[in-house]
Image 1 (cartoon, one colour):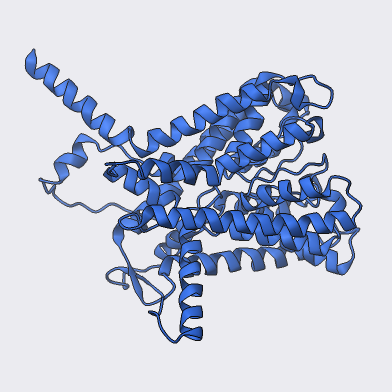
Image 2: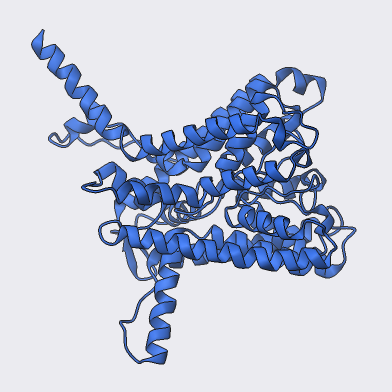
Length: 471
């Protein structure tokens, strides 16, 4: 009896050690803000007509803002200035607030990072958690706030020229929403009425891309610029080399902006972009390739795109942004490693080599695992939504293609929709809430694995090898 009790306690302690540190802290952080935020949004003072919406819609909107997604089941103009300000605060809490929370958590006196917490901080924020992690996080928060401030000033000036009466507040709201890749706009039509404003859209594109680079890359760029300036002005300082991770991020970001832009321009020239002039067509094509990867703003309605253009949008939403950023999705580096590993032949012996650097087997294995789990997760969410919306699909109010698009958008925290979000029933909205949370915290939910007994035993035992047919 005592031995059975001891085994039970040991298993409970092992489970607690694995799940109660970083991952549980982030879960608690999201749950607390979601509950408090949705409770506040139930107050009539945040609405123009002083009539709060249904609680499921309130919770959905709160989680969408917290997970920097952008899906909204109601008309955004139903909120007054106070409601939009609260929404902007929730967006910031889902972006930089998460970093601030962890910087306080790891800075507590006598606080030592467990192995799991160390991996959580590395995956979410910065790669170097062994030394100066608090100072690095502080620098990231300061630089991020500075970029949002400058972006808000530029956007406010442009909106003032467009005779927008609330140009100052809307400028900073859009700056926060764009940098955090949230995709919330203060107008019912998102950004449709600004589809030809090239300066405005250029600022939005810059904020979205910079916010989606990732904090490790941001840290790397800051150090690179600082050392270059010191060497140029004073001739001192060590030379800082851009890391392999940052190089891959830059290559994938450039590729996923330029190539899809050209494809969108060809596919939608006489379709979604048919009413636009040539410069606006080019801008809209670039904007679409950027916004699909977790930003969520719209210049042209998603329902006006061709089937091929819609498929490309779904592919970009599934890929998402970069690790350690505001973005969700499978992540660019994951897709990059899987593609490189897939084209590696049996003649290529040893580690996968990229940019004259060898990639550890653990990284390629993790990338393959995350990709497979993400595909399974997308499949489960789509299947659940198809079951939940069976009657609407059979009645012709919603199509299965719309459901697939909505599911991928939620998991990739892209926030784009083909207009079905308000039509979904409460169960479907709850499914999407789980999908948005899974997409935002994908590094944890998709990468965390529970060691099985066979895996533990494999450390001490070698089984006979046997080949199977593949392909």
